[in-house]
Image 1: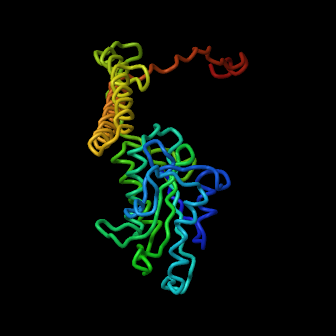
Image 2: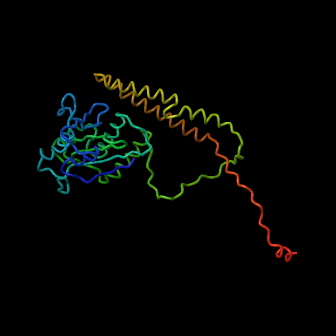
Image 3: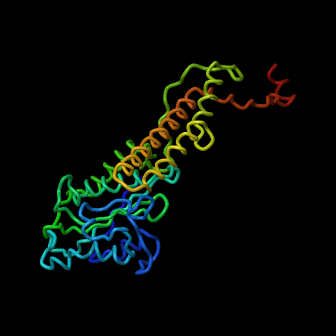
Length: 297
């Protein structure tokens, strides 16, 4: 996961435009419902949204920027009035597709470590997490709190967010994008026991069985995971808090099943015997000319 902290701005228009990958509009509706584009938000949003929780993208941008209009005398410690914070998290290109609950968790964790949504703080900042493009999440927030004060943030914000990104990757079983010099060879481990080419091993059948179980789309665990995800989607669509909570729990269960698939795949890779080296075609030795052979006698 790569974290990008954009330059602060006085409006949220550009941030939301970048998050969606298109211009904001007064006609396009963005919803906070499961499966919607706004996957997480600040804890007082219910006081402002309607029952359907659908606003146009332009209205969302105005909502985030409103605190600067409501508190015109508030500025940051350096006197800067640009209060819009925009953080983007880019997943690894080979990462699996995340569900609504997992995107929501990433949004809440970014908002928390950035200092805009401290746990249990009812006076915190307005913010939303937008999942508008594949493999990407944008957290857009005002740095002006609900009580009219400027929020505190870590001194080294980017470093703090990158550290949290590593933790998110571990918790959600995502791939980490290594920061290393291109072209540098990976460290090699010490030599292991030699296995003659073509020698059958007892681990080969076991590796095959594990690979079948770990197949991401066609294996038996995948079938169960996909069924659990479907039930979760149906549960979150039902009315009532209990159904919504059950849907989130089912999404987490599906995530754990995916983690089991990845773990079985890693074990299968360790059990798979190395491929035999390619045989080299023997060549005839090069003989010295007859004159040199005669002189050597």
